[in-house]
Image (cartoon, rainbow, N blue to C red; front, top):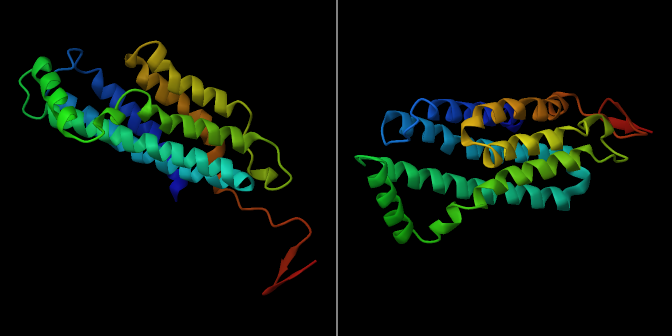
Length: 206
């Protein structure tokens, strides 16, 4: 069931980016709160998406595990960042007051500096790495492979808001969907039986 996170995550990111655009001032209020609730929810969904993608790289368990852990660390950082922002915005009169509250929270919450900077982006790094692993040809589970362009497309979508503008988050979220759709379909497909074996009754015949 974790495969549904592959589609849920970009939907949540799209909602975050779209609601965020409703208030260009980024001031505390309903728009800020709703958009950041979507932002917070997107990170666990991205972590679950990484967990689902691990099944497509089962023959490279070590590398896949590293990517899943990387995504999990990034998701924890992203949830922490969203939580701090939501708490800071709660009851703040304006953007300046929210900033002061956020700085105060970062001073009293242990290791809160890890919630910012590159740490939340590790979630997407792990997903891109898993898409690369899922594309690399292997002698097993060939039917579960994804096209080569999935990883570059996902990378471009994840990087776009950072290098261009955060206002492009909805566009980036839409671009993530075709990047992960082949993986979603592969995970929904029946798993091929091991080569050289054929199920019959309760046993196997070579």
